[in-house]
Image (cartoon, rainbow, N blue to C red):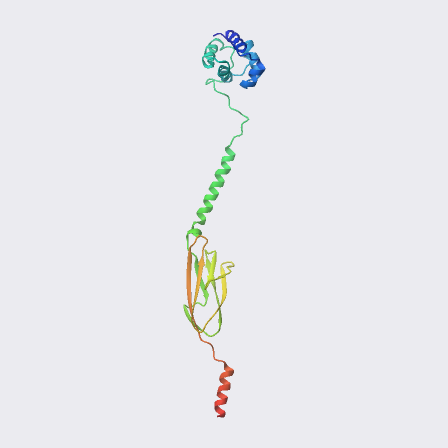
Length: 226
């Protein structure tokens, strides 16, 4: 099929379908100017071969002919007039398209930073809290007052409880007054983490009330008078 022959063939297909160039342009997405150039056989004003190839395929679908075959036959007859985009005859690269390299770079960097943060947090997330009771230091003591201040430090803990009551942690330090009952008192300190790990420390405090000096003195005086 010669290029001029295709122009005649194209015109016949338009008449068979009762299409105007404007209607065909609307259906095909090919500009009316380019369709008019095809109809006139003015291929020098048309885009490069890859685009024109696409035109033939699209027109074949709409006008009921083999666009691939028509293009091959026409290409053999019109090589001198047809624009070429290069040896491989591929669609040219869209220089206006945004390159996603920067986007992927920042996403990758963000992912690396998150990974580093998680790695650094593994000891804190997986390890157990560490408790150090500063007062009293001994495991078991004798004490003569009704209340004692339990205090110390804690590492890698979100909460700390003394005998079931929560104490405030400030810069790793904690303290709480604990009331004592006569005899043996067990003070239990539990440090907990958000993910469930906990550590416990215990102190045993034997509370014996100190004798009232005034009561002892009065008792002694009464005995002497008798």
